[in-house]
Image (cartoon, rainbow, N blue to C red):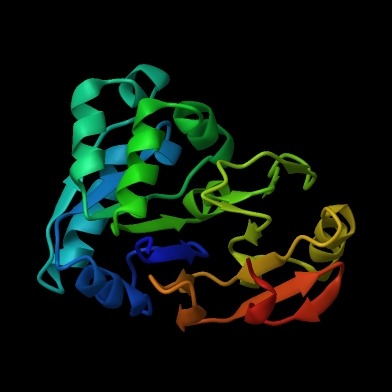
Length: 220
């Protein structure tokens, strides 16, 4: 079995993210390796500081891994850290930058291998978007390639902040038959190690297929 996987709708590491304690427990209360890659141009150290305070409140520890550029994703020391990790968390920011740094990189291969060996993997906002495939392009709403940890799944973070018009446009552009999941901030769509899907946190998770509302049983 693979490890637990969490798609977080944004607003990570705040009150209401009750699922983080569950993820920490599922990892064996291991150190959380935070990759602030998507926040490379938005003070990535602040994301690590926020995560450190948050997980410390539940008895956890955090290691910030500054994989900010492509050479960082090819660095052998970073690869070793990710491969040995039991809990990897991709912070929010720019999904396009995150994808460009990690796609087909040794660090991404290490993350995939760790997950397949049972490690917990979480991604918030941009981190959640890239874990699926296809991925909604934030520059216009069309769909593009994600990293595809889970294929045939599109994730829309910050769903509680979207207008109905923006949502309709996204559904209209979605590839036929692909579930599109709207996840509110401080909310997670979680895939447990046995493959079962559930939601957790403050808000709601909504699934659409071909523009019609569906349920978690539609997810791959």
